[in-house]
Image (cartoon, rainbow, N blue to C red; front, side, top):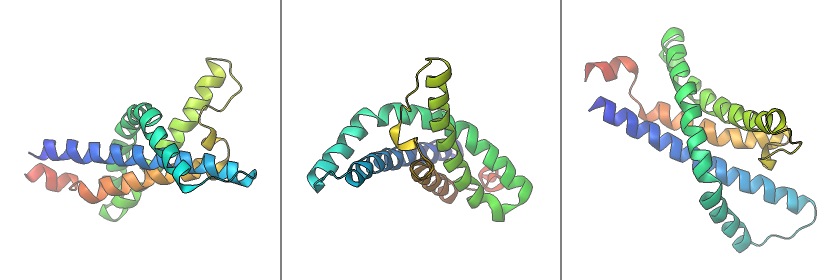
Length: 157
């Protein structure tokens, strides 16, 4: 039963991260348009979010699934080494770092492998945008740490 709960909590964190990062991506891009003088009504914003959730989120889900699969075990190990007090902070930072690694990795892949000069996820082009996306991953990491029982508790069940 502990394994099923762990998988459910992990998938909930991945879905949460996917939704939050996708919405953050939409927001950052739309805000850039507003700064350039565009007027974007609420209905257009909501439609853009819906379209990003339908088009961008499925790929993002897979990337976050893989990114958290690396980041969360490292955070768990560090939490055990540093002590329980670091656990929630560790998973929060791991979630944000995973998103940063994903976004920077995508850009590096496009540049090195595809020899492209574009930033495929425009919202990650500058530091404020990248950090905004990372907040979604950090929130997902915090959620994971909050819902996942500590390792010693899970092994007793």
